Image (tube, rainbow, N blue to C red; front, side, top):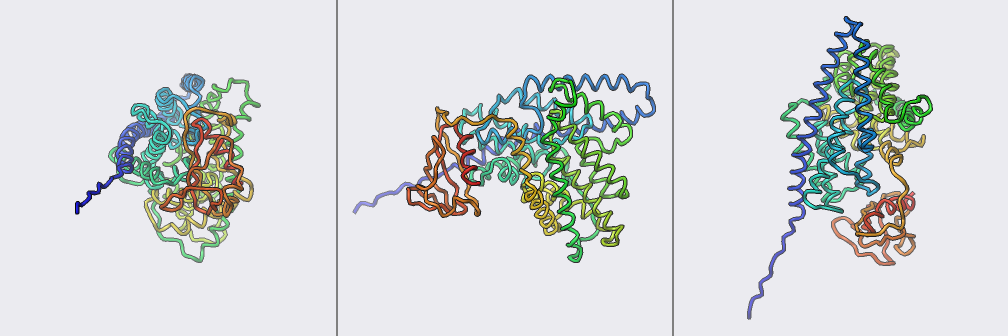
Length: 512
C-alpha cells in the first residue's frame, strides 16, 4: 500500500505583516524623531529669544514682522496642499475609511516644515497629530513603492500612524490601541500585528534619540487612598463639562475666524503668530504643546488663582491656534489642559480641607486621562497612554474612574468623538454609485447594536455592498439569509473601492 504524502501549507501572511511593519517603523521613526527634535530645539531657541527681547524692546517690531512672514509662508504651504492643515489625524482616518486620499510626498515635506515652524514657534499646538500623519504618509510612500493597494496599503498606513504616535510619545502600546480604537476602528489580527510592530520599532529609534525617561515623568509621593475616590467623581464630571466646551470651540474655530477677520483663510495663522508675542514675553514657560509645563507644575504647583489663569490662557489660545488652520494638533494641548484642571481641582479640594496637598500631582495625572477620554471618546487609549507616558502602573484604577465619568458626562451632553467630527468637516458626501476595483469593509458589531440577533435577510444592506463573511472569534462564517448576527461579529462587506466611505456611512446609520 503506497503511502500518500501530504504537503503542509505554511501561511506567512502574519510574518510578512511583521516584516513590512518593521520597515514602516524604521522610516516613520526616523522622520518623526527628526520632527520632534527640531521642534524641541526651535522651542528652546524661542524661549531664549523672548527672554532677550524682554530686555531689548526696540527689536519687537522686527520680530513681529519676521513672525508674520513665517505665518504667510506656512499659509502658502496650506493653500497649495490643504491636507497638511490642522492635526492630521482626521486625514489618516479618512484615508483608512476610504473617504479621502492625497499624494504622499507634498504632504510629507510640507507637513514636516510647516509643523516645525508652527509648533516650534511656541503656538499652543501639539506634535502628536502631525506625527501620526507623517508616519502614515511615510507608510503611504512605501506602499506606493511596493505597488500595494486596497487592504495591504491600509495596513501599512495604519502601521505608519501607530509608529508616528509612538515616536512622538514613546508609548508603543497606547499608540497601537489609539489607531485601533479611534482611527482605524478595526481590531483584526493583521492590523494590530502591523501596527504594534511598527510602533515598537519606532519607539526603539525614538528612545535612541531622546532616552528612556517617559515623556511626562511625574514624581508623586503616594498612591491615592480609597477614601478620596469620591473626589474623582467630582473631577470627572467637571472634566466632561469643560470637555464639551473645548469640543465646541475647536469645531467652530474656523467659523469664528471667518466672521471676525477679513484675512483669507490660509492667512489666519498671522493672528496667533502675533498673539504669541505677549505670551512669550510674559509667560514663556507656557509656550508649545505643554509637556514641559505639565512636568514643571507637577513638581512645583502654583496656587489656585494662577492655575485658573493658566487654564483660561491655554484654553483660549489653543482654540485660536488650532482654528487658524496651521499644521499642528490638539493631542498634547488636551493633555496639558487636563493636567491644569486636575491641579485646579486638587487645589480647590485642599482649600476645602477634603484632600492633602501631597496628592495634587496624582490628580494632574488622573485629569489628563479624563479630559482626553471625554474629548476623544477613546477611554481605553487615554488610560493606557497616561500609564505609559507617566511610567507607572499604580494609577490604573483612579485613571479608569475619572476616564469613565468624564466619558459618560460628554456622552450625555451629546459630545461627539473630536477626530471623527473633524473628519466630517473635511469630506464630501460619499457617492453610492461608485464603481471600479473591488475592496472590502470590515465592520464590527457592538454589544448594544440593533444588528444583534437579526437575520441577514432582514437587514437593508447599503447599495453596491455584499456581505461575504462574518468573522466570529477565530473562525469565519459564510453568511446566508438565515444567519443571525451576534455581538462581537466582524462583518466583511465587499464593495467597490471608491464606495467604501458610502458603505461605512450607511452601516453607521443602520447601527445607530
